[in-house]
Image 1: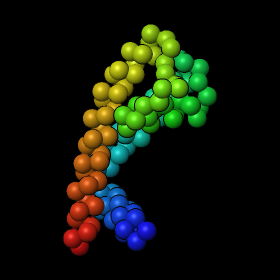
Image 2: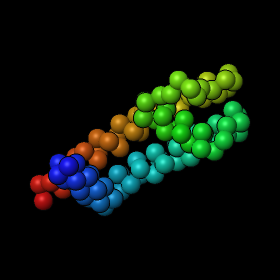
Image 3: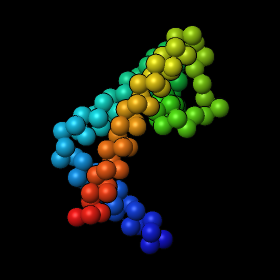
Image 4: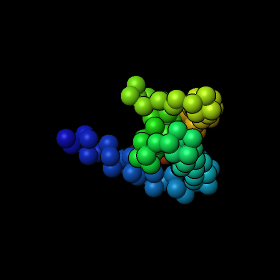
Length: 108
């Protein structure tokens, strides 16, 4: 339990350090914008409830996936391919930056 608490403290310290960097803020903003855009798209095109659309957007961005929820329309499938390719790159950049700031917070 102690290591979990310590890990969370380091994670939040990393976010705090990262928010001072304009590039980190830009990546975080683009990631949030992607999640919102994906949610709006899935809501409009697939007709999903807002929570389902948001859930699927985050599942696609984090590569977790969910076999119970998938786009049915051709447009939805094509969008998901592009959304995942772009979003996974953004998520990777975000996590990479966050890890470096977390390590800097630990060293401070």
